[in-house]
Image (cartoon, rainbow, N blue to C red):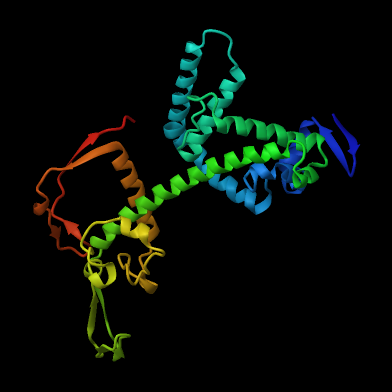
Length: 335
């Protein structure tokens, strides 16, 4: 059930023995790696992705990717994506009057599904059978598998631009441009969401003021003398509306200001979460909660303020509160 053969420079073993396969894939897992014999020929397409690396880099990507395939994800997002694309496939089959390529249809189904699950972005190949991305992806795989099995001189051919290497370069450029476009789009969406949250906290910080008592006499960087026992108050609410820091439009809600910055202000300038050794321990949790809630609510509902804006008032609490915020919500997205 196991045999060996020799190719120039190395010995190759082939096995179908279940015990050998378990030994290689589980029992002695760390001893068997992808290695350069696999990673080099496929690097141009797979790069340092999960299918082409070993060790800590593989483990980190595996752990991160596994979060996409939890039971909860299957029950909510994944099952809906698969059901939606299945409906597209059956609709296409119903429209076909003659012979059609079922293999290509399944490829298109798989590609669109993975795109939506992994990146919330459909490749669109079910809508467009002649998708440039699909063609480039398929042809790139064909050339790379040829590299692996039958072309020991592919590195020289790539260097000299011979054989199928020039064609592969064109296809990989198209795939790279498409992937970079998705990444840019996702980064822009994340940046826009963060800008909205930061702008909201700038104008309406959870803790509007705080302070400390000076144990000893001190002098501030601006020359202000602080006597011993003096209570020094700092006010994030006022700091967020300071013209010297934020400009003439400091009182306007304008999230774009955060996108225009070359770097984010320090936590001593944007002090909504306090700063220094007493910076809020739950900052990352709060930011994640706000981001997820905001994204979900604005995606699924159309909100309307059911009171005059002038009637909405703060409530005096340890953290900033409101004396009610009457809204109505109309669902705009079917779950």
